[in-house]
Length: 100
Image 1 (cartoon, rainbow, N blue to C red):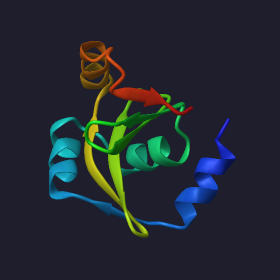
Image 2: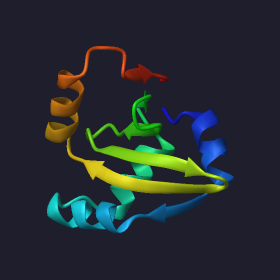
Image 3: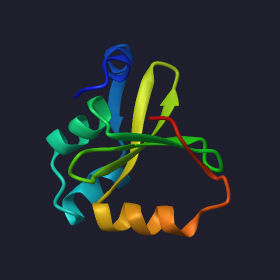
């Protein structure tokens, strides 16, 4: 079930993919539609307080790391399920806050 609050919020922003995100998409065979699926319909949304970024995770386990800059959402990188799980297992010290 899509999170309606997240969907309404994203309509207000312009989405921009960084060069790094495009490179990771190619390397990890992640499609642009997967990026938007994770962004608009996250099953989990996490805040990384060390880097001041958000991580939206899709049903497929694809994680989109992004930051807010005014009215622009800059997608910094994308992670496959394996990379996301490895990242989360390393940090159990309060760095990450689960929002949804």
